[in-house]
Image 1 (tube, rainbow, N blue to C red):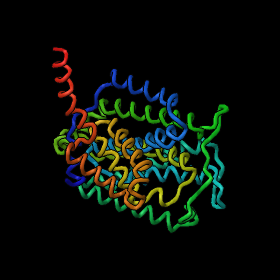
Image 2: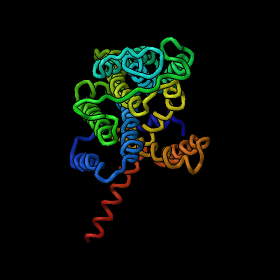
Image 3: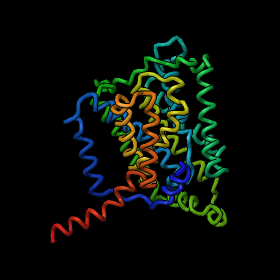
Image 4: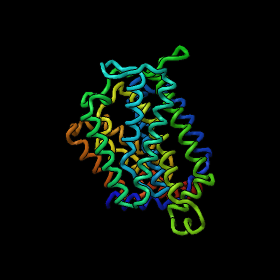
Length: 341
């Protein structure tokens, strides 16, 4: 099954569920996670998964609610990451204006959201494979531009020595603070997407996804709604880019390459695109495979492995891991009922 077909199947899903007991249990587990996890699992698994989950969430907002599949989310995140390096501090001899971290973050996320809106303005008049190809072309062009431009992006080397801020007596790159920082940003974005999906704009966007002609006939500005969705997804992707550059301590063309662009789509599709929690589930699977399976199959075969996992999950369940769980719940409930009898 192709990526487009898998995505179309997920886009047709239902609206988001309301926050309930499962969310409370999940939040409690995530908050208590540092009590049982080592520093490695806090940052390399926990924090990194949340960052990739945010990237997937930005795509889910577009594809799940708007029916627009983008391969330029890592580009938007990369713009924010480069802005942090250029406007803040780095240890290269290129730029580094030394702005305060909070101003740098605001400007970086603002630039990312504007860039996302511009990408949306270019691609919203297309559908399906054409949107994918346009956003892929933009992502590829940005990769080569950063690789060849030395005056602004420092070329192939990029920027290094980018430290997370330290305030309130806390170094926010230390394992526990950084994990909680990622968790806080992810929780705020997740709640905002849930709330936004049930707002007037969210309902309108999903109606445009299902029948744009009817919505246009009713007087809605379909193009404006889609571009605004791109703007909102840019905010989420921009925040993930800021966290990513603080996580790595550097940013280079490899950060925004075609491989990472496709990985964002893999993360979102594997987890399930019809609900905001799906990208975070996919991110956990992706990061665990990247961290542990790479030692078993080798770095050169990792893309083959993740591709096989992607194909298996999508073939079994077009809704990804979330779809598998939804299909398993009736069987589990039936087994529980039989055991009680």
